[in-house]
Image (tube, rainbow, N blue to C red; front, top):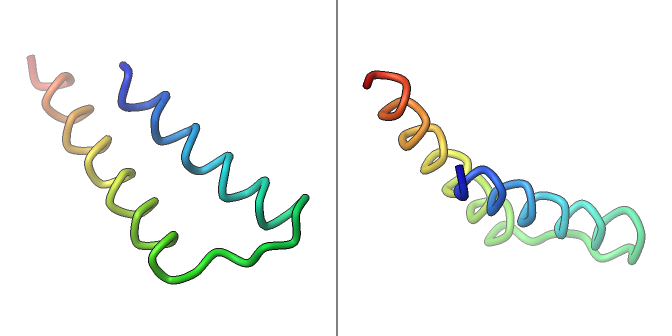
Length: 50
């Protein structure tokens, strides 16, 4: 599932910025990751139903 790769990439990038570069994610970053995770959950639940 390509959406899973995208969510992992986004989450890892934000974690890297926070943990390695010391840049604290803003509220827009948190909302973006939450939306991506929600979208991935919707897609995954649709795949599981078939």
